[in-house]
Length: 125
Image 1 (cartoon, rainbow, N blue to C red):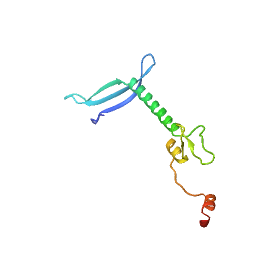
Image 2 (tube, one colour; image 1 turned 180 degrees about the vertical axis):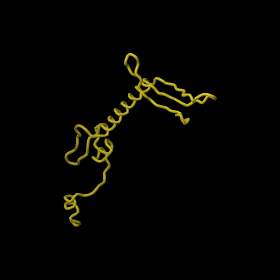
Image 3 (tube, rainbow, N blue to C red; image 1 turned 135 degrees about the vertical axis):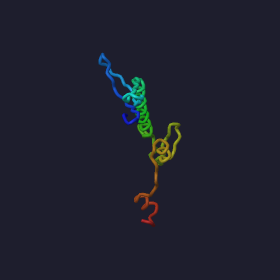
Image 4 (tube, rainbow, N blue to C red; image 1 turned 30 degrees about the vertical axis):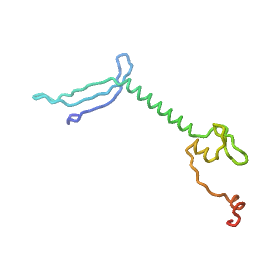
């Protein structure tokens, strides 16, 4: 600051009664001809702003957690024991892959397991 660069810090101050509050302190050097350099400071009570920032951060964390929970499959999923289609929230039946893709972040790649390859494509086994 003595070199001329302004200073900005945020800190906790203590009142006479022992309670605390948050302040932003701005300080800069002021040169007055014929005198030693002066330091000009201003302080702003930022307690309310800090509280709002903490509340915002907490709300963002809550929203992020809720979003992650929404994108997870939970509970009982009605699935056909034969064709493996799933009954969706509207009562319609849809393919397993479509349902899971719609209700999660999962993506699918398809292949053929050895059991199905032997049964359906015996010429390639």
